[in-house]
Image (tube, rainbow, N blue to C red; front, side, top):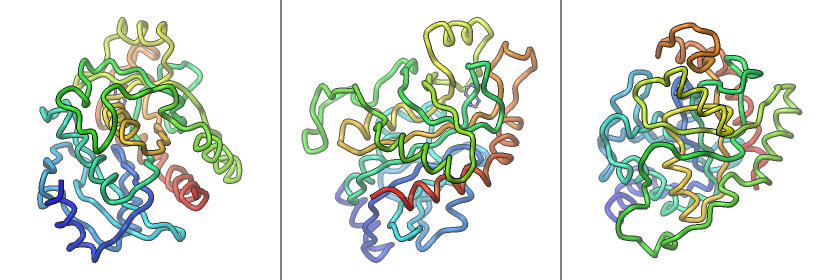
Length: 267
Ligand code: HPA
């Protein structure tokens, strides 16, 4: 970790971000528009390379609306074959850089039948069905305790800020529970029925490992899903990665303005 921090301090002239943002599939454009320093993941000690199409794979440092922000343009996923520890290492790096608030974003399938593609959903809670937990293994007490409480992973005050910002911008916003599967296969109709029965509103393949680690090390978390498709079985249509990227593209202007407004309003 010391290696990584020293490396980034040198690359960024000791940039000290207070907000971290992880940009999901198709949502990375914000980091093209705001970029004071950019460091590719494959140069950063301890980071793994992203292998997914549509993901750039770089850490971007920028001042946005008066706040110092570090953005992950693209994330690493469990389904790429990386360990839970590897994919959540960047969250620990953000903590060590001084980040206090982490905004997690992703593309997700709608399980709640009242949601439509291109809707944005504030994550109120999650269900970890990935079959693994990034905190398994020796506990590093410098970051957090062995058995972290999980009663308010997604902070209520941040949810309120996000709702107010959406309202101000005239963006209809959904709220709901995010269910995480390991992927990379999408869900079967039977699996989606199970997910709905068990109380989730959207399903995806990311975010939860990062939320678990961020909660453990005391970051204030806000999660926003971009609904990219109706999850398997709702429409009977087949699902493709291209469809997911296209829907994220359609939502990106609204998504970007919402994130910018939230950044402005986080203290
Ligand atoms: N399922 C899982 N992950 C996803 C989906 C989905 O329908 N859409 C975008 N990411």
